[in-house]
Amino acid sequence: MRHIDPDERWLGAVVHGAFFLLLGSSFARFLTRDQGGARTGWVVALFAVFCLLYVLGRFLAPAPRPGSPPATRHLVWLGSVSVVWVVLLALTPSATWCAMPLLFANLHALPPRIAVPVAGVLTALVVASEVRVAEGTLNPNMVVAPPAVAAVATAVMVHLQRQGARQRVLIEDLVRTRHELAVTERRAGVLAERQRLSTEIHDTLAQGLSSQRMLLQAAGRVWDTDPEAAREHVRGAAEITSRSLAEARRFVHDLAPADLAEHTLPGALAVLAERESGPGLTVEFRLDGEPGRLPERVEAALLRIAQGALANVREHAAATRAALTLTCLDDQISLDVADNGRGFDVDRLRDPSGPEPSRGRGHGLPAMRIRAGQAGGTLAVESTPGEGTVVSAAIPLAPLASAVRPVSHAPKEPAL
Image (cartoon, rainbow, N blue to C red; front, side, top):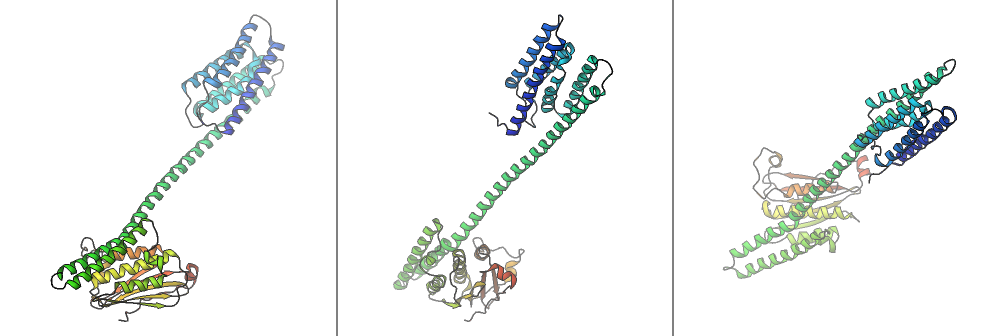
């Protein structure tokens, strides 16, 4: 069942009411002025057929929806009513003004290129009928008034049809645009969630598995020669397994990192530095200023960046010392991760034409940059072969203040 617009229903009620009012007045005029002769019975029968056809068409051949082509049965009905009216007009001029509802019906159902000529024909028939029954001097209004009224009605109806067509095009464009926007937003959400999952897995499970592999390989190498050291490596792998399991559970439930559930950000960084320290690598944590209460996303981003940076130090830098420095300013908080390792060529890392990294590598720094960007900050890397590396993340805490007085954060030299 199609939905009928309230305005369309109101217009239809007015047109139908006008039809029956004009039909009644035309029939009354016929009975009082034109009745007589053998044609009276035919005229009364045609008035009845005209009224019956109009009523049946309202239910059996409804008008088409705006912008839709008329159905065949509606065109048949429109032609039948028009033919009956022409015959009735030829028999009695009293049916003249019944042309107005037919005019509106044609203009509503037919395209303008057909409706306008039809309206001209109906108007010409009305004028001819008025002139035919005129007595005495011809009244100019009989010739001028019907075309003027028909022209105004035709212009209004055609204008409304074209305006409605433009509105329908705009509405269709709006609906299509909203649909495309919804699809784009869903796609962007999927990509963002995929990126989040990849960084979470890299910073938690992948790093834990990498550490476990290194410890178990070390245990395998000294299993026969130094059982105590091998057992120590296995215990370390078991501890990493427990932490990775806790991270995985919180990751599944989309919670903050496990360390932040029990500590503040400085406390979590201190625990991380102590945990990453071991044979061959000493990690030190330093706090400059008081961070106060930070948004959860900022704390989580900085902790994950520290974890990723230390994972790179442990796996690639061959460093003996590293330092975590958390610096708290009024309008930003920054984290520096410095090491005294082998370093690398930053320009080659940025050069897309350089050698392709080995498969499975190279996700750490992009993941850290993504985390810093999601928190509204930036990530900088400074490194020179043989002189260590400094990874610096700076996140603004008051964007408006930063816009007025920007603060540039220069990475600290590793005090190692």
